[in-house]
Image (cartoon, rainbow, N blue to C red; front, side):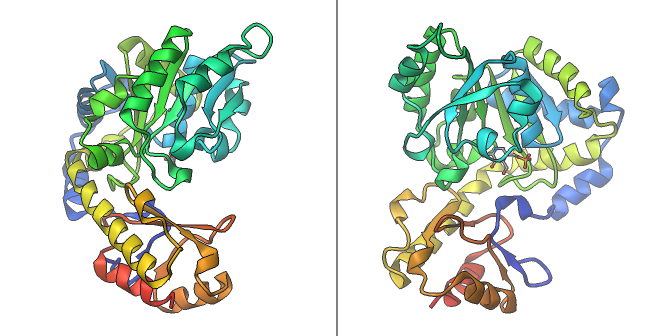
Length: 341
Ligand SMILES: Cc1ncc(COP(=O)(O)O)c(C=O)c1O
């Protein structure tokens, strides 16, 4: 359902507001000082997240960006390169953090839907000794800039095994890994099993107001705890927000509802604006629309949306991304589609 003010916000799954259950959990959470490691709510969240991903330990961080960057700091040395998809979030939308904070560059591949193959890894490693050393392979699943596509587990397992053979360490930007779980029924533990560290966000489709987590072996997480301090990411009575994250994690199965809604939207658009959507590519909670098929300029459409209480991101490069989440429903989707024709 739209927000209380009637706004249906399709810009991102980050816009959700805490549920009454989250607010209640936040109000009653037992607290301590997490930098001293004695906030029971944060400790519980870290234990639950480690268990869900099959890792030894976990560390709560303010944002997905910080979780990714701490992992990159852990796994790389200055002068190295990261092997990643060209549209990966860590490369494209984290404000140059890998270059600025870790002194690393990128070796990129451009596979469909965020995929990286064993051949890509072999090719990248074939120039070892001449090109900059590759210190890390980064996966992103689901793949945001490819429209929320799922990188298949078989691809991740095969390629990661090749990467391991070359001695690479592996990180997963799993900001939306539970969308991949919901779309495939492959458990989080299996996806996480390919990597040394996995970051996931409570503040995306899981619907918590704040926070992400990095999971990995205990020694890796201990080192990330030290690096988090360096970045000023140690939070004190963080149980206030971790309480909502615990509820979000517990309710993760509801993500399938977002996927059903995204498919409904894609079907309506394909029907009303033929050629605008490749419905088969809608695998999770994002719909990519070819804006050239919409028949209205963005300023015109944006005006219509403004007056009917709808928000979406502006199209970029002709592609227009619409995201479903807990705070929009079928009536809001109908309202959006009605504005287009
Ligand atoms: C794939 C992916 N990774 C990382 C992030 C960063 O998360 P945050 O906004 O919490 O820093 C995002 C945010 O949208 C994302 O989509």
